[in-house]
Amino acid sequence: MKGLFNMNIKALVAEFVGTFWLVLGGCGAAILAADFGLGANGSSFGIGFLGVSFAFGLTVVTGAYALGHVSGGHFNPAVTLGLVAGGRFELKNAPGYIGAQVLGGIIGAAAIYGIASGKDGWEIGEGAGAFASNGYDEFSPGGYTLAAAFLVEVVLTAIFLIVIMGSTAKKAAPAMGGLAIGLTLTLIHLISIPVTNTSVNPARSTSQAIFAGGDQLGQLWLFWIAPIIGAAIGASIHRFVIGDAEDLLVAAEAA
Image 1: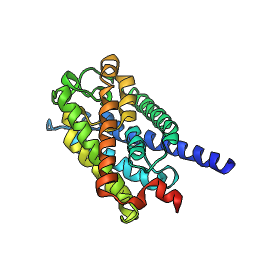
Image 2 (image 1 turned 120 degrees about the vertical axis):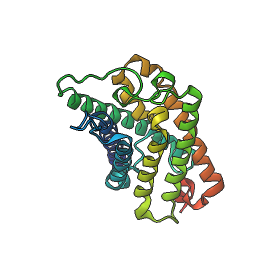
Image 3 (image 1 turned 180 degrees about the vertical axis):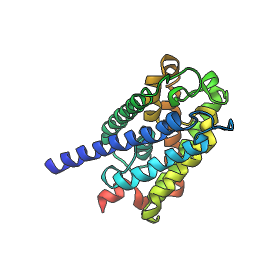
Image 4 (image 1 turned 45 degrees about the vertical axis):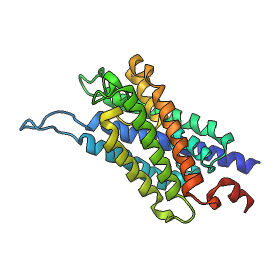
């Protein structure tokens, strides 16, 4: 029992640290480095949407290899619940994981705020993308509707879970799993930053909405519901159509 308790604590700390790193690295890149002024010739001086997309992907790649062996490297409530639906994770452990992820995200956002507020004249701002927040309608970077935002978050989170479950299956190449998952998150951002500023992760959305303000908090419901629905769909497709029974948690316990 003592060993199990220690293992759970380590897993929760790993999920906290991994989500903290995802928010600090991904959202931090968006806030601090995406576009921080103009060069001498008037050109934009920053990493842009492409750089932000890779920043999010790199946080997952590095987090997966550093922490995945401790907790599984979820760093995302939708991933945790998707893996429950996919038969890869126990429901009883999900609340602790989700709590650690949300807390890690909030602390990550607080760290970004502390860094950014050290620049003279910096402020969070208002409207679409404020403090790397997610949104639809007037809070969508490209002015996309609620329906479009809901659809893109469902579809892309479903694909994300299919990749996660496929790349971590017993027959997959284990050393490549973290890279495949991180590159998938990069591609997801390349597709959907203009639509919702990309969530597919309720913890990431919550952390930024808290600092961005009431308008973004009012739209936060979508960035919980849509990714969770998408994760359940993707995980179920893999579990019942694509995957092998040997990858299910019950099979592992029986062995």
